Image (cartoon, rainbow, N blue to C red):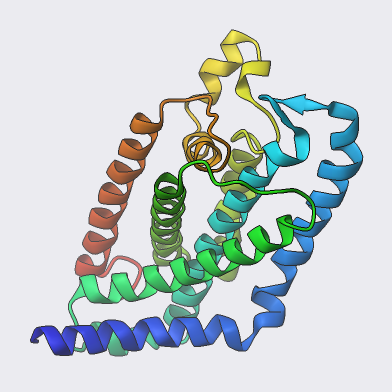
Length: 257
């Protein structure tokens, strides 16, 4: 396939993915907006007024970057895992696998579909936050870069989860028992500097901590971890998950059995 045909194949998958989640916007875009608004009201306004400052900022300002990143992570992941598993369950994916479309184009189409939903939710949640606090961007480049890389990373994770999933129950196992706990313990609602030294060191094993803190640095200019190390780690994880996903597509693991 030449470059134009590759782009058409990629664009077709991407547009289909975007149309899929925008067509059912009441299920894909509205619930996260309502949920995050409740977080803003309960944790930001009600509880935050009792907590006071954290990291030199009032509590609402401090948690907003984490809540935005939490929305991007969960929606990027859930979009790809649900979409790809549905295609596998309905045997639609077989049409792609037997076509001349390269595996990397298939992967890119699904991944950037997840990125599109994650970023769209991120924008919605960011706009909602303006009703509760004055959001100042400290470093625009870091902010945009980390949110894009994070959306790509968790879209890849959702893709791999969908390949291994054998039922719709398997689709929800990782988000429920892995993704949600790691997100809540990833510094969304607190600074790890408040923890005893032992638990600070344990927290450093949580990859979501690095994404949340890097995004918080981009917005507020404060972070509990090294920004350079965090961005490098995200890029490395993207490379590893991409290679794994392409290997699974090549071997047909969970797809041709």
